[in-house]
Every structure is written in C-alpha cells, then in structure tokens.
Length: 206
Image (spheres, rainbow, N blue to C red):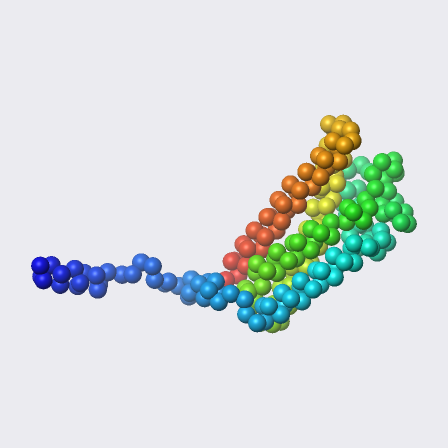
C-alpha cells in the first residue's frame, strides 16, 4: 500500500500542470481581467458618462439647426442610397422634394451615439495602459460612434423608404414596422461595432 502511494506521488510530481498560463499574453489578459477598473479608468468613465448625460439633455431640447451636425450627413447618405433629394428647412430639418419624408431631430440618432460611446468606453477602456492612451481611446470611440450613427441612421431611413414603397403599409402599421426595423438595425449595429472593437483590441495585444 505504501509502495503504491509513493509511486502515485512521484508520478504527480512530474506531470505538467495543464492549467498553467504559459504565455506572456495569457498572463497579461488574466491580470487585466482580475484587476477590474483602476482609479484612472474610473475617472475617464466618469467624464464620459457626464458628457453623455449632458449630450442627452442637450438633445432633448435641441432644434434642427442645432442638430445639423447629425442631420446633414444623414440626409446626404439617404440621398446616396435612394433617389430622394432633401432641402434644409428652418425649424423642420431636411425635407424631401416630395415633402413626404422629413429627417427631423427625432431621426438624428443621438441616442445610438450615446449608447455606442458608453458601450465602447466601459468595455475596453482598461485595455489602454496610460492616461493619455485612455483619452485617445475615448476620442477614437467617439469618432467611431459618430460615424456608425450616421451610417446606421441613414440605412434605417433608406430601408424604411424601401419598405414603404414595396409593402405599402398604412398607419399605424407603418410607424410600428418602422419602429421595429429601427430596433433590429440599432441592436445589430451595436453588436457589430463592439465586436469590431474587440477584434481590433485583441489584434494589438502582444
């Protein structure tokens, strides 16, 4: 019995530990995952959250002219995707030549921009090691979120126009379908944006 116990002990002492982290990248990934947010991360995230809240408050009362930075590029892309042409009208937004479609402040997509910026910041700010790196990451996230907002919003509006012409829905069904279409497109776009950011972050790791 003692002889069998000694053999088992000797065998276990030379058996490699399969769960041991063998690469520097694996150890670094585990360290970051267990460390959580640092003080610098929390400061950056507090600043981003404050800016996002301020933007939401601004958006709730902003006019079409004040939201031109979001509405104008969206209208230009919708013109590219469809055969519609838009004209800026004070107090309204961008009105199509047929006057059947208005890209108004409610269509600006600012809520998507806010959600995308917060998602990227909270998910990946820990990947930047320095304070300047974290600030640059937030800036890059804001640019990416803005570009995504314009493209996704223009796609949503263009698809709505196409569905309305093909299906020919009437109110209130048209509004309901447009709302459901927007939910699907926004959620899909948010998933693609965060997945792309994750792939970019992992590609930069040593």
